[in-house]
Figure 1 (cartoon, one colour):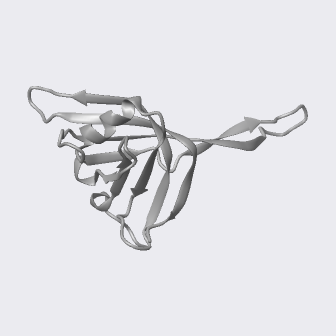
Figure 2 (cartoon, helix red, strand yellow):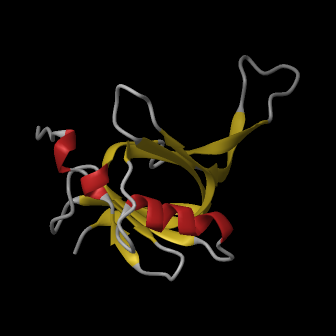
Length: 142
């Protein structure tokens, strides 16, 4: 059994121009991927327990980390540009890292919410919520 430390995770996201940007150096948490799917209940009289049938994937995910306004490559430039985007953004997430053969979750998403927070006694941080458009693909980095 091989275990992996979270410090090796990789996260990439398209900017509004469609360029995939690596944001790993700024992110300290990714949650919600690969996600779940809807289950429709089909329980009827006489059944001994609830019954369900699988439905559509319904995936939302979030990222959070350290605010940086570096033009083109910083998380503020990449994520804030998606607030008014008219097309989905591609994402890639490698919980074990991004080297050949490591697990990769990918897909298209919409930015739902972006927040920047500053406190007098802490770093400036950000958080962002995304809604997957379609399905999450599970594969490996080539």
